[in-house]
Length: 504
Image (cartoon, rainbow, N blue to C red; front, side, top):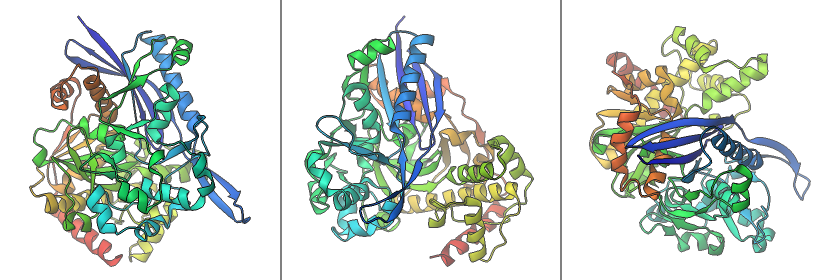
């Protein structure tokens, strides 16, 4: 009887998790070993001109410390022997480091306001159609293309000292094993990678004056990149486990764990701080229609994720933060959802992706202001506000599904919701109702499971990801939600579309 143990680090934009995955006799078990919360930290600092600016950074020391806490818990509670480690993270941000290994500044958070005007700056240097033809990625303020151009324009004096740009997951691979590579799934979302060649686009880098020398090597998911540093392994009390490139963009790992029977008929929603709504296709589609619909082609595990990003739990996370600040109580998700169940149906509808919701100081006020400018009465009370967000998210999923199907063809007959949001029974049911198709919810920890499955490929335990799907189906419950009230949701969708049209 052979036993293989893997360690998955899943870094989201609001929390981090460490898991142990064990494959024994063809069965997979997943055990959470450490969880923690984190968030961007804002500073108000003066620049060289004396102008005061707000800067939002990630606490990389806190994140690294919690990875080590997770590894120590593994050694203490499971074993001193570990086969491999894989890290996934959100699909933006990173650090620049010197040849001596020093980080040349903090890691900026993708919601930092320095990026507010950077899309226009990128488009001024290279034709936007050409960028889409090469990368298949549409324009978002947080794209690494914007971030590195900002660095070129505003921190040019540091460029001669920069040895490498380390994407977010690579920062922690570097801390663990001196690894300075990135997998193609994460590289694909930067808007700097050639989607067909899986290499950095020299044309785009040159247009943005980003030195090619600072970009990390791109490897395929499943590649063994190195081992845990010897002194670090000794301090933790484990062996020098292999460091394996997984789908380091957390959405790639989450999509990899969706138990899809027929990709042509399935819509996948990775539900968390963001909702990533998409379909799996064989290769990138960079047509005029795809670009006009702002659809991205992100690298997957042997496929392409044809998807659109949508605000997800971020809106409710921010509501909880505002209410916690107001009354000192941290309301649970269950309590909020309980209030939402009792609230009136379709009292107000919002576009979850309205720019006013991207980084407001007060999300509740931002929602009220959106309603007022669209001729609606703001929702009254916390339950009504949360319900308005969930109903609007479900209707936005329907809109995005129609756009995806129009471009790539076919019809959606089932929705797979994976990730932490798959626990949200209210949103799951609303999604089934809005799209009028069944919803299969789970696995809840899809990102970690996809991470572990790619590690298994890197260890030679699986030949392809398709071989992992039967293991996933056997190992994890997948609740099913049937659609209800189609006429009511059709009416709400018509109203939703009218509200969004008037905001264009």
